[in-house]
Image 1 (spheres, helix red, strand yellow):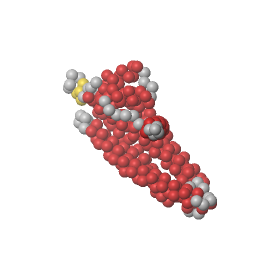
Image 2 (cartoon, one colour):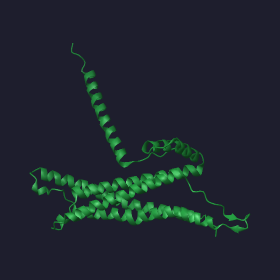
Image 3 (spheres, one colour):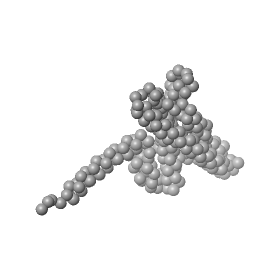
Image 4 (cartoon, one colour):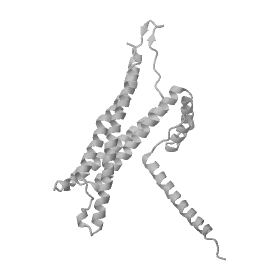
Amino acid sequence: MQPDPTPLVDAATSSRFAVTRRWLARVTGWAAKATFRIKRGTPELTIAELGKRWPLTEPQRATLLQLAAAKPGAAFIDEKVGDINRAAFHRSAFVLNAATHLLFVDLGAQLLLSLWELKAALVVGNLLLALVAHWQMRTHFRALLAGPRALPKKRRMWGLLSNPRYNKAVKKNSKPYARSAWKEKTLYRTAYFSNAVLIFLGSQFILPPERLIFPFGFLIGKITGLITTLVMLFDGWRGIRAGDDARVAREREVSVYRNLKI
């Protein structure tokens, strides 16, 4: 009587599934580290996820938990974490664009010119934008730890006179939203659309495919076209989303100005 092959098949299948699951877990972990996305849920979960990304002292954690106990504080934490995630996404996106320009875009060659300075300028420009997004992410994190700014009283002298410090504090609270709207609309959106156009015009592997041995040149050309097309579509999508984010920032700025005592 021959042994049943089913246990061997099950063992092999389970082993392959375990290996695949480990590789997927590694890829997911690398992607999470690269994109720096904080999971948003309940305030306690959000603060715990925030502590995994940045070191939080016990007083800072206690302050955030106390702030999250009230509804306005929970909304403030959710807003700042969303701003951090968006800035981190911009950082990863511009690093991706820099790598794409370095490896898969050669606008000078498409123009029949030898301009390595143009490629270097595009790579450095995207890295500078990634640095701006990284600095913005750190700024949002510091604003989160600082907490919402407390407004002074609207009136002084036992309510007989208006307090000019109140309106100044309200205008000061609106400035971060104005800067964020300017960056999203003028800086990031323009950069995304410009990257999409430049990638479309100058898509070419760092080595010309026609110089490679067949079929490597054909395969490299197809793979390069696929990668640059995906990055180009991604830039177009992010340019549209940057316009939406700018609109949201302007709406928040206007909502702050509604508190002015005129």
